[in-house]
Image (cartoon, rainbow, N blue to C red; front, side):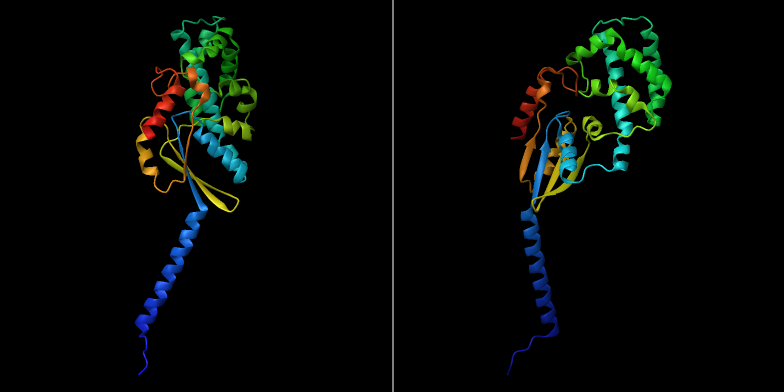
Length: 256
């Protein structure tokens, strides 16, 4: 008497084979996927690395993506100048031209509407250019290691006419130099030599570092970023801790 499988047994065998094929396929996919975890304190360059990988391996930024960076770039320029003006009193530096004191008042009055609209008006442009050209402001800028200032400050403020123009479209360099605080967990994928890289960017602020522990599962490698130019700069989080690079190294020890 021959042995026969019931229809239920045949279906179960087919399901088992499908599951086996799926598991093999998933295992092969995982072997081809490299998970890179980007860690580092705020302003250490993690997001810049992500942008560079997008440019090199993912076709870069199309026109619409470039346009989306315009409000951020204008905000960076305005924010940098207002930080310098606020630092004048702290560092006991006076305007070289007393008329610039009125421009400083105008700067704070005009920046709110400008940031909400994502544009620099002709009136605000004139105020910013006059302030940036003042020798007292330049002296304060040169002492930026004594307070917190982004390293893109001179790049944008030296080119105010271009970035404030209505037709302005950010270039790749403009985008790479832009700074925005990363919050949460951001994943970016790109392919290189038949391998899929998943780069995970996690916020570096003190409040965001609590989330790092949730990102270690399945990680192939950790890239810990340290801002070399921060060796004598104050920590962004409290504007008091000096030698920001040394603080970053202590954070590495905490991760280990």
